[in-house]
Image 1 (cartoon, one colour):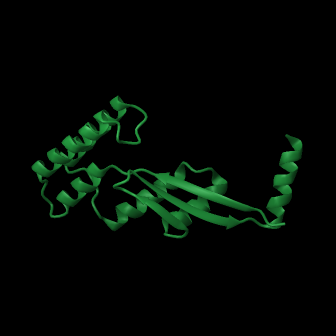
Image 2 (tube, helix red, strand yellow; image 1 turned 180 degrees about the vertical axis):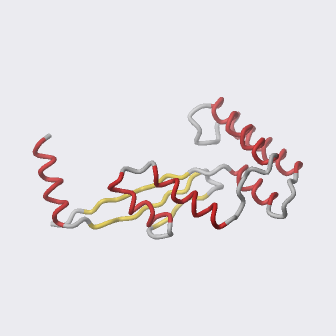
Image 3 (cartoon, helix red, strand yellow; image 1 turned 135 degrees about the vertical axis):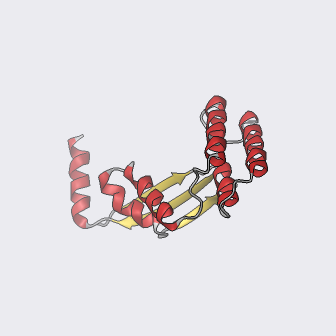
Length: 143
């Protein structure tokens, strides 16, 4: 019997980071655009329209993102930086799921959600070999 394992990665992205990255694309920081995005993010925090655990955490994140944007520290669309960020996302995944995570980051699987919605959900279904079934069954018997 082949067991199927589903790996889901929940990736949230700040709209401020994307707006600031766009402002940095030409090498100059559009302070007005960064400030407008910060005010919009701040209002979303105050209205509870984010995925943050608390209002204060949300406000701190919005402030730090604004500071990073104004300092020109956001990466924009540099392909090397984007590839590095994809690898960093998978570091937090347990070792047995890292390969699947990297496959997700390379575009395999299904994607739903959006940055505008505040979340991107990536899902990859992986068939495990029969040996993994036996290991899993043995683990269940030992518990």
